[in-house]
Length: 145
Image (cartoon, rainbow, N blue to C red; front, side):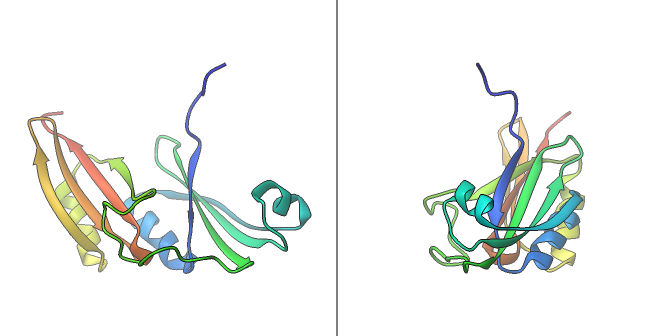
């Protein structure tokens, strides 16, 4: 038995609307939003008295980013909001883009911090963007593609 594909990545957030808007600005599509609660949800994730709002966003090729806003129990912040890229744990999500220059300009215009940009050899141009709640997104554009 093998893994078929990655379905989604979960990001727990405090300001669901701001983070949703950030990923929509990047080009993801809101697939749906719902609130979940009850003992079945609690047993699945190992918490009690769970009530959370979930928003599922998809890239054009179907990859998912799930955003969860916990109403109960309260979410727990671990470390600083603007942790550096070398902080332990999941630190960024990378997306392939067609026009990195246009994307960087668009994200700057919307007030998002561009951490840095570079060219990786003859293969890729890269940029790191910091969005709401310290979320870091990498953008990669294939050179000569």
